[in-house]
Length: 289
Length: 350
Image (cartoon, rainbow over all chains, first blue to last red; front, side, top):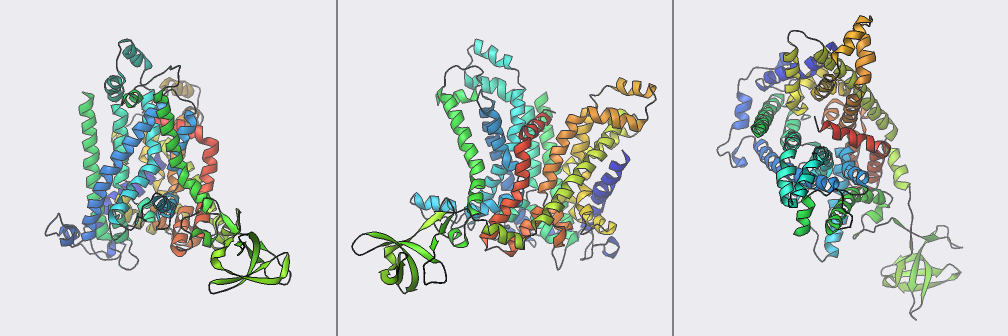
């Protein structure tokens, strides 16, 4: 009991409190006693924008770009992951041979380090890479997969889905297998069509599992950092710079570490996470009734 | 459309092989190829020489130029298939190249030199899995040290995680005391506070404790994970209290109850937490990137990232070292895959 509370207190609770202190102090010194109180200045810097829809007008334009990038990443990555994981789980839940093999096959990339994943795909997607050779063989011309804003964003999302869907597939598969088969048998006797049994048996009983998976994917997607950091380095330009990379590069800049600004940005991230999670939990509770 | 609809249904006992089954197997096979293809491509590429790697379109297998030792020449010469003026083809060794002409020699008859146009010759190549990239890579990339650091971090962090979280879960599930629920709720509510949110203050604490550039700074902070406490507490609640009461009557100490009754009974939950912990720690990137700046302390992901930054155009070395980095976890997975996949699947139900 005690050791846990000690570690928990020192490395989670205390930092949570200290984060407020950092967010309201300035300077480039790490130790709290050396940091001057600046009030809401860090937040003011972050939120100085003449037009919030145009990051160019903001004093911290990269912060707003990162927020926009993170938002579109979260929506597409979460949607894509859950859809692919659901299809795969449904396929694996059928009466098939070699289920264990396929299940492990889809799961394997989950175990790989984001650095390894980033490098593998950088190698495949580069200008003279194997994917472009397929495009050329099919009669096209080489595509700027990592050099064009839209392509790079799309590939960061696709690679994330590739790397993580196996995990969610496992959880959804467990949820599917927990649905009593008597329900389907009863449906068969009543002559229920496959679509109806999916809509009226599978989906409603899978909602709790889907909710867990959604919460997990959203929490994870909001903090996206390592895999795009290696794959694209946040580029081209700032096209794949996400909020955690902004915090990291602002707070751990080798010459002028702006700890206060980074702490303020991380509080914005925390607020977003809080709202998202509470919203999803409320949604889940409404569903139970 | 009919088959797509059938796919959504769940058929338990189908005697014949139907269109839906075909669709299912087709999807799963394609999916497995997409999952493994990139890794296979990485492995095949890692055996190619630098000039093979920059070739477009790339070849599937690693080829190497075949050479021959010809009497009268010190160096082995590259072999080519030459189409002679009379239309016949012959394997010859290249002596020198002058503009668009090359001087070739027949290894069987090294005396006479034949002059041909470069378009008349094709290199003779054979598939060779050369370990050259690996040996040169290892010379610049201290794989042994990084592997040791990664194993040490993963192992000690996982043991510490299991120990401190099981103790907390034991306290929170088997003792009644004031503030028990408050503590539990505080811990669980930090499930939503991931490390990036408190990056800077944790860095300060690490610096104050003196764990900057110390593996302890990577191991300890995330060991009191709220996920772990939650997982283990929920499992321990299912262990009947009567078991503990009868042990107390028999005179067992609280420590002994924890060590000899609770821990063995909670093995399934501990195993799941161990799997998660190994996965998190082995692949951890952001936190070690901040704590560790001395090269000899790097874990594998950090080392590989800095290696590719240093040799970013030398794909031959980077690819080989990427393969080495993914090897350990792949071997572990190959042996424990059933255990890992079923272990994770059972937590999804809770």
